[in-house]
Amino acid sequence: MFRSILLLVWLLVMIAVVSSQNMNSASYDTAVSREQIIENMERRKKQLELMLQEAKDKIEDHYSGRALLESEEKEKLEKRNEIIERKLERMQDLDEREIDRMQEREARRWERRRSRGREL
Image (cartoon, rainbow, N blue to C red; front, side, top):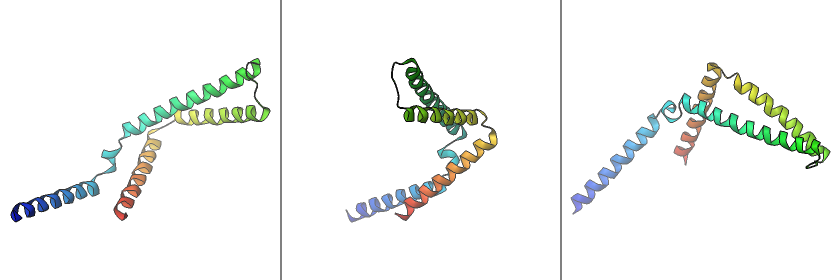
């Protein structure tokens, strides 16, 4: 009986050690790939395009008299549209270097998260 318990404890310790080693040696590249970064960027573009269209619709409704906006709110929407349009333009010009930088930034973020998990 004691031998079985000892064997079970040893087995659990070995599993914990192997899991810890896998976590420590896991490379970020396997956690988030280039393709995932590009997919995230495409998803973000769609979100921004939707936000832009919704804001344009509100402004159009304002000018047509269907749903009047306060002048401050209208100005805020127009400014927001400019910002979103610029963001979308920058996203269209995404080159390989920028993707590499994003991947490196995500790798550093992942490392910080992992190191915080070890500290806790």
